[in-house]
Length: 108
Image 1 (cartoon, rainbow, N blue to C red):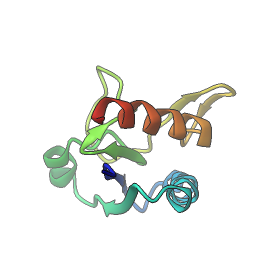
Image 2 (tube, one colour; image 1 turned 135 degrees about the vertical axis):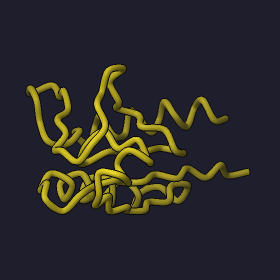
Image 3 (cartoon, helix red, strand yellow; image 1 turned 30 degrees about the vertical axis):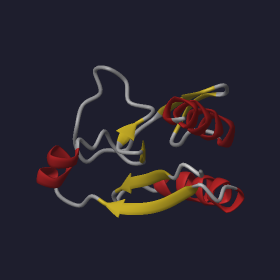
């Protein structure tokens, strides 16, 4: 049995970093038949509150923000990620793959 993994990219247009995350996630999704990638535009502060949007881009795996810091605020802002090369506007491909592997193992 193949377990499906739903990955959602939440973003808002004013932040350009979501496009980098989208390219990286699309490349991973092309390699993995078990992964469904969707994109969700968050365009109001009210919607950001409703969906728990921690900034653009946010990556949810099966509804969970896999990179959220415990004290992360909610709202329309650009988000930064800790990467091996310092702070960046999107996780690296390696970080995304690792997060998807960890989540995939907890589902099985």
